Length: 65
Image (cartoon, rainbow, N blue to C red):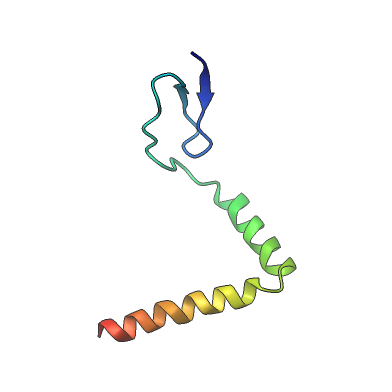
């Protein structure tokens, strides 16, 4: 029996009994946006991935209409 900390919801649980994770509790938006900006600035493929995601969402909207 050992106590572990979930990396997703950041709660502690008993390793022997399992952990029904509820998902993210809170998001540190400042840290998230800083990481996102760093990724967009440093990764050559990041801008294409963001463009493709927007394009794909737009296509889904067109098909639903």
